[in-house]
Length: 444
Ligand SMILES: Cc1cc2nc3c(=O)[nH]c(=O)nc-3n(C[C@H](O)[C@H](O)[C@H](O)COP(=O)(O)OP(=O)(O)OC[C@H]3O[C@@H](n4cnc5c(N)ncnc54)[C@H](O)[C@@H]3O)c2cc1C
Ligand code: SF4
Image (cartoon, rainbow, N blue to C red; front, side, top):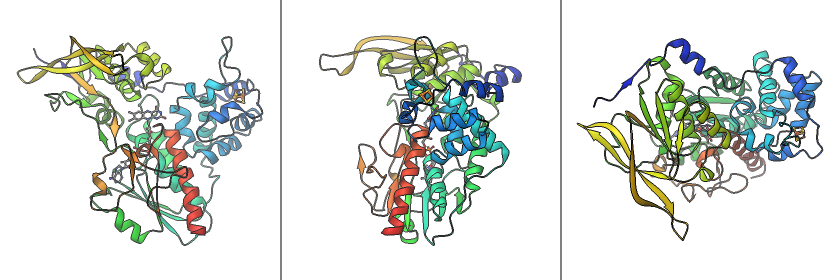
């Protein structure tokens, strides 16, 4: 059997249509009408649910009164990546879930789309509402130019501190640039937001600078007054099966990066595709390979729907795009013929009396030309080898409530630290760290 993997399964127009943004931007009239639905609650539950504490009724009221710049400034003052978050936040589990008018009869205020409306307006206008304070004479190093690192850098600049961001890749933005699904986040959005953040001044970004290869933590600590680590996840979990290194078995995050960076009509797309995993990365992978023209896409997760990392909404997006989701099965063998992948054999799973998941011994296989692994990412501490590294908890960098690590002059945040892995939480971590670093630099 020959694997059926081809590029250009769909024509350019169909691909462009499939990858247009999930939500069409609101018009001015729609934004005003939507903002009029808000009850402007006192002690608003939506603000309570927002990880970055945005004054949601405050910004919606400004949209309602026509002050869109003011609305955007309210948002960005708490969440400098409020534009990305307006596109990719799981609002259905955060602010919109708790909106008081979210009832059986009525839908919640579409807070995410209003946030995007206001911040799009500001970012397109060229207005810069923030300014750096006069130079403090202090210099902070930030490792990683993702949401955590850039949020930290921006807040530090508002305090007057000089910031140098060291980024391993060629472009700043982290997963905003390389990871978020292309149909949620058009490429120019990430770059426009980064440019807006850096426009404040006091921040220089050195790309192509990898911790552990081009510089090390000990050396940074000698030169800079403080250091923030925002490395994200820098490795992926493996299945541990034979033939895992085969050409047609991909890490989902690597392929998703190609979707964001390369010509979509040139990417290799299988006819029958299997995605292994149950989180949002698995969903994004499954949906996007289907949008690229795969004939059948099956996502397989070892536990049940209730345990999936992917939200109910994300699952609905997958299912409406024709992705079949199977649960309670774990990968057992990658089946090959003449070294070529033909199928994945799965074993059914069940919980034993102690609540542990184990295989039942009963198997089934799904034909596959291409397999994507999306079984989680991790923090690899190799870049810290030879240095005094911050302490870990589990497999992440241990921090206190101020994002302070075990090292006196080092803070960390985002995916490399414990907590939920979302853009919005990474931004909040960076902000909290910057406030704490500022305290430390001013008062020791
Ligand atoms: C496929 C996928 C889809 C996602 N979808 C969503 C979504 O829809 N909504 C949502 O809210 N969240 C989503 N997330 C999660 C979100 O993207 C992350 O939680 C967020 O980007 C974390 O920010 P960060 O700054 O900690 O890490 P990152 O965004 O990973 O940024 C870390 C930066 O550090 C750099 N770096 C790494 N190693 C080194 C080194 N040794 N030296 C120097 N620099 C280094 C990296 O190149 C990168 O630029 C998704 C994640 C993935 C993988
Ligand atoms: S909970 Fe809903 S109605 Fe109340 S302030 Fe927030 S968005 Fe408006």
